[in-house]
Image (cartoon, rainbow over all chains, first blue to last red; front, top):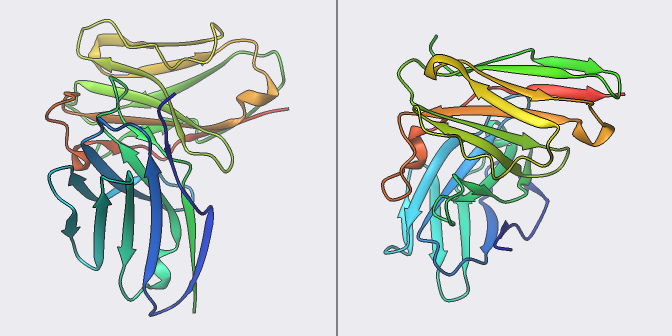
Length: 112
Length: 119
């Protein structure tokens, strides 16, 4: 069936470096994607979203890139900080009628 | 309350027992969702409620799982005859409305989850 998945389950980066978290999706009809951050013991929190009529969107220290040709999106975090340590999920909000289809998540660990 | 509240936060139960997990959504939110997060996995959709409409139960993994939402507010997820594979974090979320066309990711709020361990 349709799914949203992630390339890497874990990512370790040095504090101050940039982080890139990748996500692949399979539903070619998907047109809206969201990145969520989940800290230990908490529920997911919204970071940034992107619609399919865009290929890039920037927020505060975060950028999401969407490549519809290869059905891939990425989350870039600039100047990664210890507080960025968490699990990051991409989600497809328009895949059929299921509210939010989540990928497996990438655990980001920031090394001080 | 200010956010989505779930209880219990942690539950250890014996295999074969029934458990009830409670979710108190943000006041005024008509849509309520349940997800399951197994260790090292993503969030698996279980069920969602939209106002007084019949819930979408398409994600419930078996007939041992059921959920209800009384009075359009508090929801209870019930797992009967629990199995070890039911061990997971059960997350509840709420939003003003679920509309596939107009949904915005920053309008859904998650609780902190109920950690269920079946031994």
